[in-house]
Length: 235
Ligand SMILES: Nc1ncnc2c1ncn2[C@@H]1O[C@H](COP(=O)(O)OP(=O)(O)OP(=O)(O)O)[C@@H](O)[C@H]1O
Image (cartoon, rainbow, N blue to C red; front, side):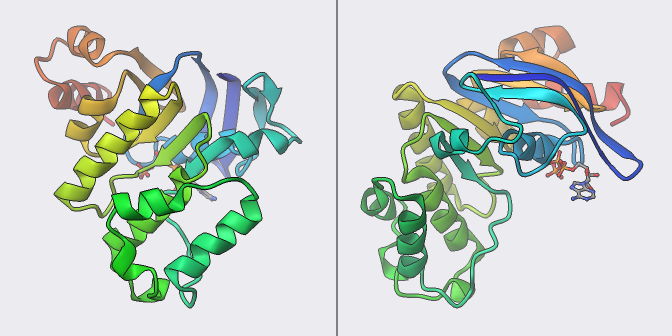
C-alpha cells in the first residue's frame, strides 16, 4: 500500500529524513512514533506531496507520488494543526469541503458521533480547541477513503471524546482500511496500534508490534519501552 525508498529531506542544514525506508503492506493501524522533531510530520507530508523530498521514491497503492496528485483522492488526512478560516461557521466549512472534494460524505453521522450539533451554527474562531479538533476529525473521516493519515488526532480531546475517537478508529480498521497515526499519548497508541514504526535520526529505528518492542527493549510495559529507546539513544 505504501512504499518508501531511501527518502531524504533537509530543511537548510537540518537533516530530518536520512535515507528512510518503509514498506506498509498490511491493513490495520500503524503508529508512527519518535521524539519531538524526529520527522513524523515531515514523513506524513511527504506521503501527501506537501513536502518535496530531496531524494527517494514514494509509491502509494502502486502509484508514484512525485509529480502526481490523483492518488490523494483516496487518502483522508487529519493535519496536526488545522488552519480553519475563523469567520466561517462549522456547517459552512463542512459544506465547502464537501463541494471541493465532490465525493459522498457521511458528515451527519460523524457530527452526531462527536456531539457537534450545538456548534454547527458557530464561527470556527469561537470554538474551543477540543471542539475545533472534533470538526477536524469530521472533515477527515467523512469521505471513507481506504488510507487514513492522522497527525496527532488525540490533541485537545477530553477523555470521553478520546474513547469515541478510539472506537471510530477501530471501526475504520474493521472495514479493512490502513490507518497511519502519530500520537504522544502512549496509552492510546498501545491500545490501538497493530504496528509501531519508530523514527530516530532520520531513519526507522524500530518496526514491529508492541510486544516485540517490549521484548527487544527488555521492558515490561510500552511506555518504559519507548522511554528506554529515547534514553539509550540520548534522544
Ligand atoms: N518547513 C520547515 N522549515 C524549516 N524547518 C522545518 C520545517 N518543517 C519542519 N521543520 C523542522 O524539521 C524537524 C522535524 O519536524 P517534524 O514536524 O517533522 O517533527 P515531528 O516528529 O512531527 O515533531 P513533533 O513530535 O514535535 O510534532 C523539526 O526540527 C522542525 O523544526
